[in-house]
Image 1 (tube, rainbow, N blue to C red):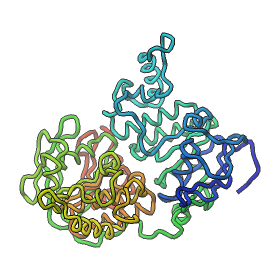
Image 2 (cartoon, one colour; image 1 turned 30 degrees about the vertical axis):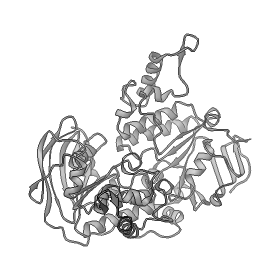
Image 3 (cartoon, one colour; image 1 turned 60 degrees about the vertical axis):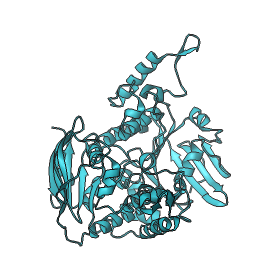
Image 4 (cartoon, rainbow, N blue to C red; image 1 turned 90 degrees about the horizontal axis):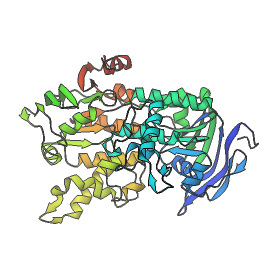
Length: 501
């Protein structure tokens, strides 16, 4: 690592260390960012990326080492100080205030006031917000409450908020994790424009295709240590994965070696107003049925109806030939349908609770005698699943919020499996988790299918849909556009059917 100061570098980090209770989160980190450069920061969950970003964004303080911002010592006193010095961050976990409007979220902490600061000028805020959203191609009314937006829409608002700070350095942590391909393309165009203006961008993503498409330089962390920095053009996917995990990752998508069983779930002409219309398919035992489509196509809305979170307006569903369109998640679980939502922290898990409590939460009736929980039975069942799924935790009593993203996702899947389902619906099961954890999830999903479960897999990641699924149902604007066999499910065909007509 070149230790000499150059006017090309907007940020230089040397020997950075950070310890939490004796555990080294960062141990001698080096990092350099040039003006007008997209510098990808790669590593598995737990590699130290988040801690490093939090230090740069003023959310954590370093223990030792040196940070130079355009040649001057940089030690932010907090997040606001970092913003004032030109460092802005788009967080992976959305930080929106749900009860406020889009405009109020955009100008949070930078409110426009009138009458000598005695009241907030909402009209001016809405007008300026509308202008900023329009420039980014975001067609969301600024008066809309954040809580009414989809995850993808909230992500776009968070991106707009970060860009509005006129940053010299922009940190993007999984910015496309909830975006459609079209929305991601819009973001990439914005990144190119920012590069041309000299903005330095630190980009974190587990999507390899993005890294090789937009990055100029790649730095890899592993276990809190700096591993290497290389020009992106000198790396390929196997080499990058090897740097990240310290070994070669073989068999990324497992082969299907089992036979597809009989149909277990039949959906006929299912519709929900303003969400989706006339959806029909069969799910077989041992099959992974992918559901693909652009954001807003109705994928999650369909899953919510199949799980009983919302009601259908028309159509029917049959489980083993018997009518089964659940009126609530309780009914779905009792009949053998489980659901792992796209937002594990908001909907899927209670992160302040333990691994044990989260796994057993939806199945406590199995371990209850009157009003008492049979703790030993509960712990034995949860422990067996934790071992089966290889959840890395110090004990079942460890709080979920302290686990890596991949292990949190495994806890969410374990929670669904403890109810002994016949069908499991996985909505974006690898969103925001690292490459090694993704491979583990893929092998787990294929194993569950080989054990006879019917699996419905919703994903925005095309390689995931093509590499893992036996058939693909493509939705477009709420309508069923195609049902493709494995041999037909190419990226070109899926995209063709996904596009609005």
